[in-house]
Image (cartoon, rainbow, N blue to C red; front, side, top):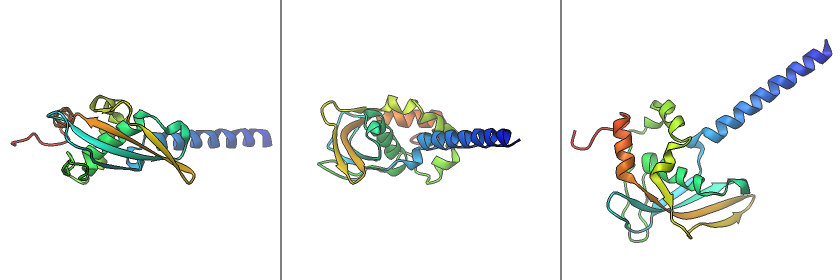
Length: 160
């Protein structure tokens, strides 16, 4: 009887830990980053400097910077910086992220990569305490991102 209870408890602990890890990896709202303008780019694009804060060295990659850039463009906006002006977030509603959480959970699994590119040669990493600051210049295809959000019904079309 004790063996069955022990095995059951181990199974429950495993399932809970997998679910917590899955939720942590997929929760874009838990991203820690700063985003500021980094000059001007082509029409339809924002050029930004993104600094992401990660705890594991294995988390240092272009994907985290792309995710932070797109998340910032959608919900946070872009602070003014080196020759660039501040930009308002594309989603003007503060509740859009929670209101459309099913859409954004799926979107931040893979689709976000279509709207941001890390500029080659700009990635830098600094160890800060027990974590890392990862900084790079990222181009955000804001017109394409806006269009995708309009088509999904997340934001209203311009002029309407």
